Image (cartoon, rainbow over all chains, first blue to last red; front, top):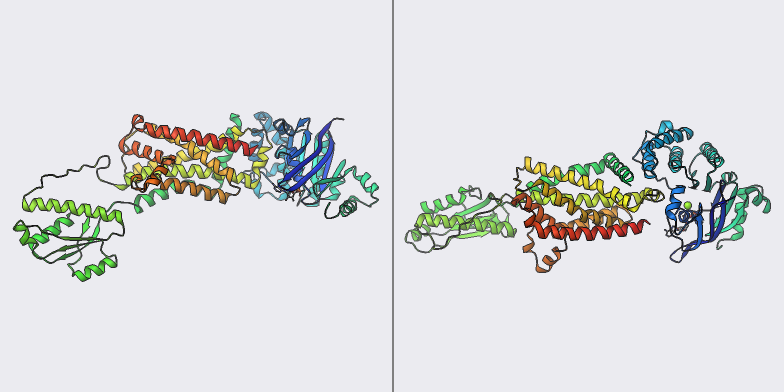
Length: 245
Length: 365
Ligand SMILES: Nc1ncnc2c1ncn2[C@@H]1O[C@H](COP(=O)(O)OP(=O)(O)O)[C@@H](O)[C@H]1O
Ligand SMILES: [Mg+2]
């Protein structure tokens, strides 16, 4: 199987502070990859480098076969990105947001209408697309953001804490949608805080103070550290690493 | 490309329309500025309250007072008062001018001797004080000629060109048009970009394959159009309400305004690259705008400024635009006269816009 994301010794420094410290991993096409780590571990910074939003300090990487230094424009055409902060236009309606991003992605007009209808239908958003995005409850906002990131049918989808602040029922439905996407061949690169969610991922990495300290299938990691669940595994790993990495 | 720009423009208009603060600013600003500056900040000097101390009390002295108050400049209908009272009135700002006619005024005048009359002016406002003195001089000279039948060998015949009534509104409205266009386009451009950065939509936009060119055009064209709308509102009110004459070509005014916009849109873009919050952008815009307005000749003639500041004004694009707008509206100036201004605006426009374009594209990458 081909690789959707390959990174090697990728590093980002902000002045003296190393936010991402020589991380390396590969993500296969069509897999759901869980990018775990506590707050401030460096997950968002790593994702921003992969999406071509931030220039790495050193190391190498490719996304969808394109180099993260030289081919950011081609990367942008093939990925979808849902940032950790809700970043749709709050004063525009759901439809207007979708229409705007669809136009920016140059989706042919007739296709765009159809795709908007299909997406809002499958995401159960149809009744909410006429309201200002800012007035929607968090769960619906996240679905709208997902719809926006999916409009141009990206091969790889980066989701930065897509379910933060959403109630469990909503989260479960959100993951059902992600599963369906993965079945259709989309690669998903997801960060999350919720360990129960991480068990939905085919493989996960655990990041701590800028470094990736473990990579593997959730059940393998649980077995390797002899813990009852992923939550305990995560805690064991972090306490082993200690406060200073 | 075109589609992306149109999408951005539509989005920008929708946002302005849905934001009541923005809407208020866009539509109230031209009206408030026009009426505030057109009426309140009028520099016309009229109806000067004048205290008269007439120690001569003759027919001739009374006639002199009458001729002084005949026009609309001096009002002397305050009762005749003592010297002491005149002084107190001055301190209390009840009078701006005091006229003192000494005893023997009419006798000396009839004997063709030299007479001195006193005129005290409140110099707090240097500008209106000198204007009041000017009026008094002219009226006195005319009175002189009438009474003595003698006219001095040299007389100055004055004629005011372009604005015969000396109405300050005629001068202010073109200035307001120029400053409005400057402020609104600079402010909207810088705020719109910084707001997107602040709420995170700029990042979302940056992961799309949008080009820097499309982004810049989509972020400047809407505000240029709004600027033209504002300018048209101000001009419409100026012509219909204030009845200012419009001597020149409308087409030329709009064409040169378009040229000038490159400097303000460029500056707005530059401000957005050096601010991280909307407050910062707003503050910086005011800073730039106030500097530009103060050294544009809007309120005070540039020739009255200290020499060093005068040199500084050459660096201010608004200075050239101010001359252009006033020239076209008041004097009917055409391109052959405005040629130096146009050249300056082209140079500033290209320089500022290109510089900001490059800086913005680099920051965005
Ligand atoms: N632009 C930046 N400048 C300086 N420090 C930053 C910047 N962005 C992130 N950081 C720092 O890098 C660290 C990792 O942040 P982030 O990648 O957002 O972590 P996570 O997403 O895992 O919570 C944090 O300590 C954060 O303060
Ligand atoms: Mg984060």
